[in-house]
Amino acid sequence: MKRPEGFDPPGRQQPGPAARPPARPAKQSKQSTQQPTPKQQPTPKRQAPKPQQSSKPPGQERAWRPSSSRSPRPDAAARADLRRAARERRRVERAEVRRFTRRARNRRVAIAAGAGTVVTLIGLVLVAVYSPILALRTITIDGTARIDPGELHAAVDAQLGTPLALVDFDAITAELSAFPLIRSYVTETVPPDTLLIHIVERQPVGTIQAGDSKFLLVDPAGITVQESAERIPGVPLIDLHGAEMSSPAFASVVEVLLALPPTLLAQVDVASAHTRDDVSLVLTGVGQGVTWGSADDSAKKAALLAALIAVTDPARAGTFDVSAPGNGVFRPA
Image 1: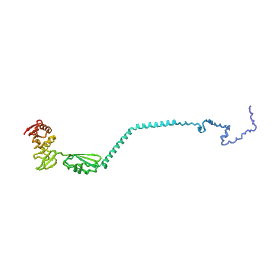
Image 2: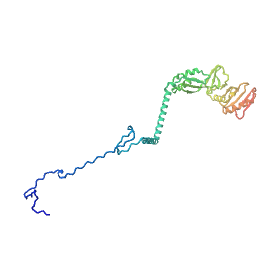
Image 3: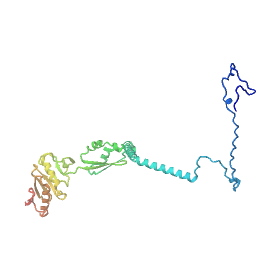
Image 4: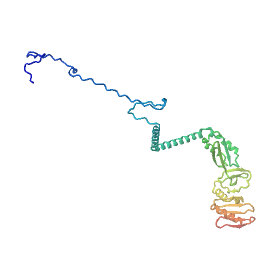
């Protein structure tokens, strides 16, 4: 149905051409432009299910807890397994560390052992040198027959109270050199406080007449061991025919006497020589003589002389000639 023109509904006026529309407010609220919406109904809350009643006594009932997204805690067995695994892991890690550091540990142990040994040795040396525990308290002297041991003790007792490591052996040598009868000596230290001195006395090899009433008991070096107004028995008389003890004749006689065995040396009464090549002997008893010659091959000559004496009558005077060691002979007087 068409609306006729110029027909206005009742209650509404047609604005004229001069009419202006009413002024629009500067700012309208959004709420004024939106149509009201129907009020939303609140969502009913979901009630938690009621816990079921348990048949257990009230004291043993477990409190109900609401479910959560966290994982449940492990029980005692699981915790024990975790601790055991952690201990095993630490044990394996320590074993690996020890395996890879074995060389360094061995090096440290070797260095520590060497340092300990050096420190111990230094300590022992210091104790031995400066400690009064190892001070010299006893001096023992043996091997003396002609020397008075009391005189030797008086000479070396100045070392008493000195630590064994600081004993002055040069001073001992100087003191013992004053005794001409000492041929040599050996010292032995016996910890903690003893010093042993082994004396080797000079052994006489013969007697040399000096003047009309003086006899000198000499050793192979020509050192006088003893002086006497009379000839000392048991020792052969050495006759050098006026030569000195430093002469070759004395050296040859001594070499011959030292080459004789003790049983044969005891039978020698006189050993004489003018030079080194004309040594001769006079045996005890009936006065049997020996033409020895030089001191060369004295050992062979001594064996040859012993064999000739064994087959010769001791009561028969004569001379044994062993100057040629391959052909000995006895010439009767």
